[in-house]
Image (cartoon, rainbow, N blue to C red):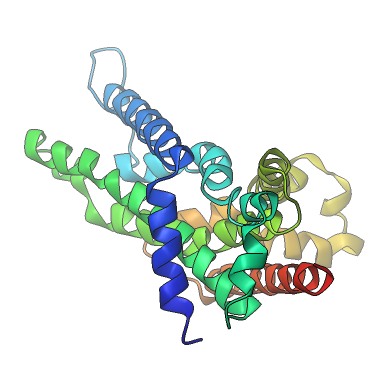
Length: 258
C-alpha cells in the first residue's frame, strides 16, 4: 500500500478541479442552509404554536437522507467511469500500483470531501450559538452524535458510490447505480417494516429482526441520543468493506481484460 497516499493526493486534487465537485458543494450547502432556516422558524415561539421538544440538531439530522441521495453520486460517479471513458485508467495501471490501492485512494478522496461538506454545515450551529441563549437549542450531545453518524454511515454510502462507478464507463449510469442501492439502504427497511403485515408474523421473525437491525433511522436516533451501538458500527464498516472489495474485483477484472 505504499502508493496509497500518492493516489489519495492525486484524487483530492482532481476533485478540487472538477466542476461537479463545486456543483455538489453549492447545491448541498444551499439545501442544508434552507433546511436550517426552516428549522429556525419551527423553533421560533409563537402564541399559537409550541416549540418542539427535540433539540434542533436531532431534527436537522433526520433529513440527512435528502442531500445524501444526490451528493454521493456527484462525488463518486466519475471515480472510475470517467477514467474508463477517457482511457486514463489503463495509463494509471501501467504504473506499479494495485487495484486495491487505486480503489482505496479514490474512496478516501471522495470520503474526505464528503466529510468536509458536512463539516461546513457546522457553521450554521456556530452562528446559532452566537445569537441564541437558550441552552436547550445548543445541546452538544445530539450535534456531536449526528456528525458521528454522518461520518460512520458515510463510509458505506461513499463505498457504494465507488463500486457503482467501477461497473460502467458512463457517469450518468454510475450515478443511477449509486442512488438506487442508497435509497434501498436508507428507506427500504423502514418502509418494509411499516407497510408489510407479513413481516409481523412469527414465521417471519428472523427477517423482521434483520430489517430492524438495518434501519438507518434507528441508528441515527441512537447516535443523537449518545448511544454508540457496536452493531451499527459493524453494519456500516462491514458494508463499506464489502463494497470496496467488490470495487477492487471489478477494477481488477477490467484491468485483466483491457
